[in-house]
Image (cartoon, rainbow, N blue to C red):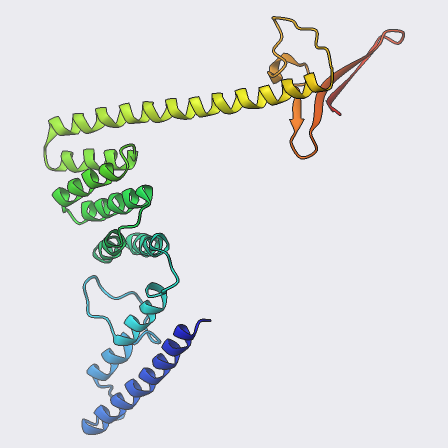
Length: 270
């Protein structure tokens, strides 16, 4: 625990003692019958974080001790801007799950204000704030946040979806079509990029295997109908592999015993 957290914990203890002493003094000044509890005293007690049973209402005033507890999480000077923004995002997501949409908007907004350099994170913060605004019926604000999310990351598909939904609520039907069309195009572009990445990775792996075979002076009898890298070409459902840890080649092997009319299959022989 850092010295800052120690100081805050001590301060919380001091505030709790002061809080209870104040309530006692207030009760002495305005004593109640033994069978009754002063409503103000009870309400003040329930607002203290040690006695909270549920999260404060959206926009309600927080008890100083609650704010002090929040400071433990938010005011860590060792956090990078991205880490701080991540914390605000997580807090906003938690509030969103509790349907505390106003509080979630506050958290997302604080995360956005940090202006971290992670475009993906910023896009998520704007998009999540759009979702919270959407649930509150703030459709124009939701649409604006979707536009900002796309500016941070042009292929953030969730922003397109939420933008189309906001346009639908605003009866901007032509814009709904535009948002949906743009989303489909972006999704196709993203899928194509993923395919190219997979193909490049596959080609790199195959070249490594071929080089390993060549370096070992192994002669392969090629057959145009057989792809040595395709598991479906082998009755074992396996293919030639290279173990990167020890640079070992692994082959699927068929062993024939003609005198016994038997065959053995070894899926990974090395």
